[in-house]
Length: 441
Image (cartoon, rainbow, N blue to C red; front, side):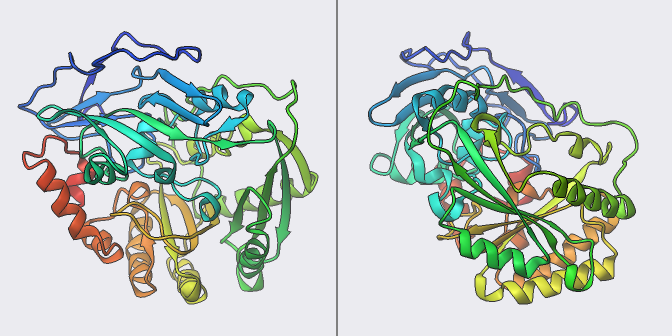
């Protein structure tokens, strides 16, 4: 969040993280007062790339102190938490008991409220779905409606609007989440080398259901038959709990961002990817990692983001249907050549299922691309939009601060229904962000 754009309201609520606190105070937000003369938007960890928690002339409500564990049912596999708790902290609490959040995004400082607001996916969406598939119940607060308890059977429409609703229905107070039983606290990770993008997709399809997590790193700076050469990561939780695998005190290492000149450009990205691949060859094909840190593959690699400098980077994440994947990939490969783009990161995952409103999901191959932020990158992404539309792709609005209403509307059949429902629920538009305005919702 840019403090020059949005004022921040810090509400402490006199609450702190406590992993042995299993009680709930009545009327948690009954005393919360917000200014009705200005639009408001809640903010979790501030990890989104799309100005989701900022608004020029508006108020941002910082939820990070609203972060207690309220109840944990060990036998049933359910946990009730306040929305401001970080998923890394919650994961630390759950693993020793033999449970885990089934869907974990890449960084531990993301909050549960943020996971709900963007209906996030993890490293195995094709097997366990989206964050929404593991939400039992929500409590949200709207200044004109009070506290609302909602679930798949109670206030169902509000429940569905809140999940993937980007904070537009109000403040998520707490959530009851279903958990996944785990057999151990370590992960066996296999790093399989692949010669090109085709080999990567074939291996991932072959191994998709044999492992807990399957994803890839690919080098898109190569040409010819080596395009997409890289590594497919196959991960499986090992049986047994060991004392050597211990919780980690997670810190937000993404801030402050690097203020100096960028290190990564068209030429240095080529060599960075070459070095990364060569270093991976020196490591064993199979290794065991602590589940606490292996759950968050970005943690400990924050230097990558700082290398982009003050201007940062841009990310494009899209799902293409399986039947359109090869044609789409061929077009993207040509665009990279034409625009002479240096691709800092390319990664694949598999997805299945239907979209929910305008939250990122669908059936097919998911591709994420990171590139240095400059005018050429914007032109490249604008051209990439046409490939996405032509081959029925689905873009991720939470990863692209450039994507507008026309693109999202073209990708999501539910765009108009979502827009109509949100504005019917909150006709005074009390909850607004730069993202909402850009998407014309």
